[in-house]
Image (cartoon, rainbow, N blue to C red; front, side, top):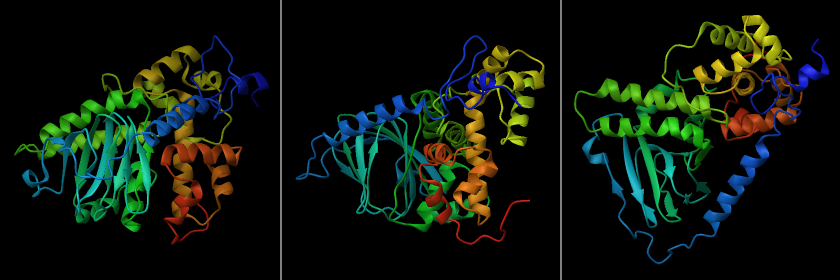
Length: 350
């Protein structure tokens, strides 16, 4: 059993753990600053003037217009919006990535804030209205619903963006929302813009698919993880990182400390933290939270166990902390997530 000092320096910290200092924060203690920033941003959006008399004012600039790529099952375009905008009825399912600015986006039943790093899913048939607060720059992924339905049959529900798309397919009036940190947007923005440039080009279908898949991969790694900094030069992870990651994935219920994990892979704690972040874009503690949240999502989508039991089996010692981390990653509470998967065949996971 690790000592109390080890636990206080362990992977339950909300910040990367270095051998030279001891951190006493619980896993969710680092969220307060980011939550306050988001609350300030929401206040900015709420205080923006609304042009009720001219909702169509301002024609947004865009690239890769729908008519240019309508024969493809998905495409991307970029828009800069300066005034209230509404696209009208749309048969495509859309994913909006906010690159810069502030806005509110609303449907007939829901209103969400849009800030740098916001990822909003819009079901087909929904007519959203964008109300920018100054300049808003977005990239939108347009997906043909039949194509999306085929992909959702095999894509994992433990991916936050996949869950939001599946949720929109069941509830056609519901906007889904994830919030990525600015560090993640530095990695995601060039990938999205590259996909925008590929969208209208003939003969670049595989390159477009690869670029879009990379964007989904970044969202999956970064959602709920403020520590995510990108993948660096995209080389394969070092052997020690692969081994450490495997230990966390195989034993998420273990009371891990950085010291113990470093001993398992035969390097120093400071070296492990440095190369883990360099190769995967996040710290060992953030990766462990991600593993536990994803394991919890898997249990809730494939079994009939309750939220507290799913949290326990995923390795959390505190179900409240587990629920907070889960909602931060998936954009919904564990209970709301489980409602999306009412038909399960098994009572427990072997």
